[in-house]
Image 1 (tube, rainbow, N blue to C red):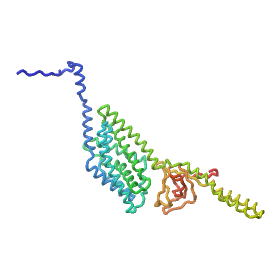
Image 2 (cartoon, rainbow, N blue to C red):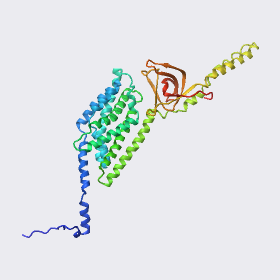
Image 3 (cartoon, rainbow, N blue to C red):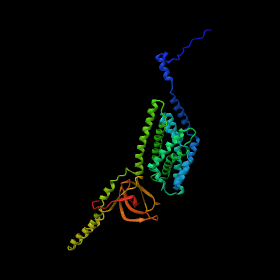
Image 4 (cartoon, one colour):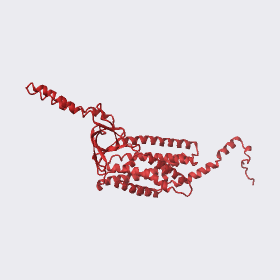
Length: 406
């Protein structure tokens, strides 16, 4: 029985036709790409969000929320230590570096689900404040503000986590503590603020979470690419670049939103000058007294009556045009200062004013609290354009020399 002939490919590439030579070249995969593909597959397996990841995220959220309610910074560290390995968040960077939209979407969805659990636990803690009658958050409120020290910690933690994750047989346990602290803490603070209604927590903490998440994505992507993880196709490069650009734009946009929400930039700062120029209104009240003296029919008293209000009018008007003014001048690390209802750190926070906001000092004599802090009674313009009186520590102000033209 004759054996049917089959087409044989010559061993020598020179004997191939041009069409077959091009087809054979397209079928070859470079060895470096094979190694990259194996590394990506191993890293992808490490970044899968497991059941333990969600369970320990809930446990960490409970401890962080409890620390917010008792206003204890030490418990925040405990909450970050109980957080799981934040590998799914690193997987967002891996999806960006490889340019895989499917992989990026899966890791982002898993990370957002765990973040949603943290936010919901924070909301429950906020509602619990009405039952437990806990005081307002004082110290931990600064964890809902953008700070370069927190950004440095987050970048270092992300870089170390990526390097540790790239090493075979290693788990980024310690770097995950820094990532969990910078992601879960502001998210839980936002939840507490949403549930309790305390100002400057919601949505400030949520905006800060978005900024930190974008920082993790950008930092991890850069480190992965430096370690040799790169897209396998040109489309992957395009997709990875697009995701990185959107992350950078997100950081810029959310930073602006955080400044508006936390620092109240939208509050008109020129309104105080307009309202203060209207202070000569009290002389009209003294001017109403001038018609009263002419009512007597005795003519000799008229000149004296008209003459006496003039000195009183000028004497009462002299303090008005020369009040004490100051502007909020806090260190560069903070965007502004809190205004309180009483001269004490335990009093209620009325609002916050950003650096450079002009206020009026009602009484230059400070009120000293139990800790020896000097408090000044001030007048400012709130968000509605109305004047309010409050208290602020004197070393947070830059007091201007009063001038009669003011």
